[in-house]
Image 1: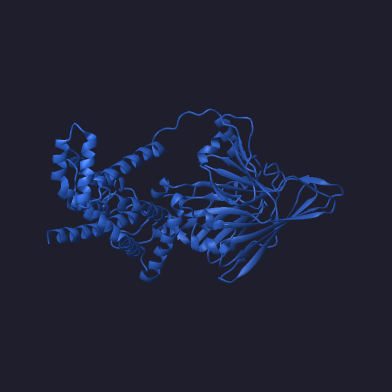
Image 2 (image 1 turned 180 degrees about the vertical axis):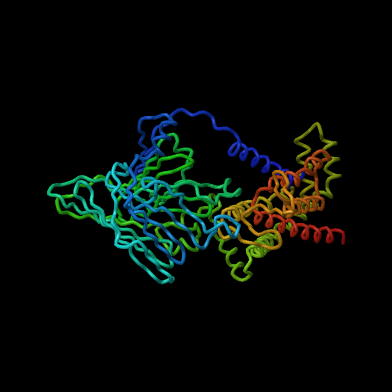
Length: 547
């Protein structure tokens, strides 16, 4: 049978099965799970189990605190973003990214990372009770506005608060006009005449970012941490079973999706504890410094970096702090990142990511052209041998062992490799999946136009025809062209399948077309161009065979 198409059918069936179970199949009821703790030495510690509803409720609830009417808002404006800080608790009420829009619509406004809420629900809250939220100090800021109009500008916002125990908290935030990184220091001074025990912690409250698109539903979003040199991504749904605790060398912890991230970077070299709580609607990440004792008159300093911005390698790598590890393409990371670099390289000269995808597709096709050529020729030769193979099967149908020996001898006589058509495809599969991950997750393609009706390569392609089409909301022209090209490629490719198998394989382009309907148009463009190049290659081989 045609090994190439058979293998495609197996892969497709596997993807459909896994995809259905992952996205549509209802999860099995689970018993209450214990809280999981991963310590620095790798030891796993469990706390008593709690019911999932109770844990979820406890995780997202915050103490009811009266709003301080006298607390002011401090606005910081830079070329990259505008943020608003509330004096009560010092949390961020708003964080708007000027270089990105919420949606493709020009009037949708700049990208808003935060959803607001009460003072206790805001991100970046510093506490001395390990994030319990029993007391939320009201800071007094030196100024209510900071403007950094130029890329090289930097400036500070200094805030001061005093706790009922007589502790003074001096908070300094340093902003930069050319970076999404914010430096934060907290100086805690014990102004009382007796020692005080404290548990300093910085908490980050997050809800899913507002920009979520159809493509993002297939990719990870939720809390992520880089602990002990390892990226740990936790599905928010898992937190409904109970809090998760991570311990060790914490590079950063935060909330990510396929395009944006918020993160806290503790700067001290000491071990830290991260507590993750919440649900799919809201996640709370608490970075704890541990239990400390402040002697009378003693001052301790705690330093962090904050990152609120795009999940873009080009931006994250210069920032350091292992934040670039947030851009993770899974198993294919080793191949995907060079492909992302090549995509940006071609865009640098073409100015269009659609053109860059075409050039990258051509480059990959040229790289695999020789082995693909051999595979296609092998399939053509196998097709020529089918009458002889059929005679052998009929002659030795009662002696499978003898039939296999004769078939191997036939292949050797005519110098045909029965696996020659399959091996080239096997070699290309990792590269396809690597490019698939890049085209689905790279922020570079978000709202990036190509031509004509394709104005966002990260979204499905739809041509508006003046009226709404149920489910599709437009005509997926590029996807249909991709399906047609796949059909033409299939008709041109030699087959050794029997008539029944051939009829089944005819439905493969239809299945792929439906599967690609809601995929990013950038991925469909890659597949379409790859099909056209395969058609060209097969045409040249067929012409050579006739000659």
